Image 1: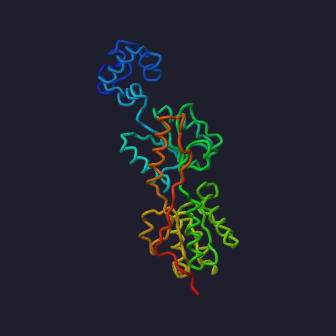
Image 2: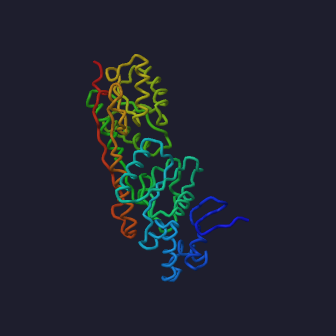
Image 3: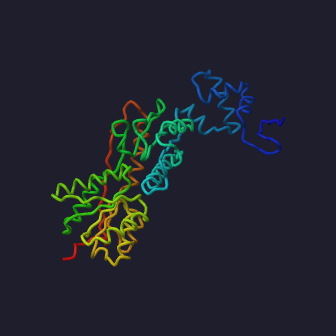
Length: 346
């Protein structure tokens, strides 16, 4: 049986200090050290302080445990998402990380890409065990928000309009963005606007679809049936080949920029000029749109502000959970005019 030294040497290899090392140095039991980390109120103040000094001396997780016990917070937040590699999630995550760094906060990421559906509660519990002060939830696509039961006392804000009314919510004004796009195309003289939508199960896709359909109906135009892609350029290309074969298609609003790139490639291969034959508008405002050929007209989301406002809302909630402040914040979107839209041919 191997032994463990105070300096963490096991079988000749150095390891970090253990709970028992702290217990020996502080002159208490291992159970007391564990209680100091998890139930500090159950330990006498002088004993608790002695254990904390031992943690500091040995370097036993001093940053998180000691900070939480002395200052009431871990200085860390959790960020929970279905996927982090998609445009919106990655851009908001980057903004949250930047804003958190300015406040000397750490961020724990948890992806649900391989987690079974309707398992947000279990994921939130796991996040709670990772010593975070609060949680930011990005879009819960494919999950039932009705089952979004969080551990008691865990502050949470969301970038998902489906939890509006249940938790503080910070989202882009996607419906208004789509209305701007449709109005721009109609003002150019297009008789209608086709829509290359995102996945039917996606809440942002549904919001953009609703905005597109409602605005056309308000203009007295009966919308044609939309096509649904999966946010990828490949799906935009596949649907683009279908739209390129229809001579009555003169303007297409895409659910995101990446599908718009695929659509424009299919139109070019079919001999259609963009914007001479077909005008194209994307959504998101990613940097590559400016370098497309032609440069892509798009609805730009302010991802930097979304991330900053999410963190601000969460910190306010952590500071005083009884007064969460504004429950909803709509971040405006912007129509960015470039070379992919023009009046239809006579």
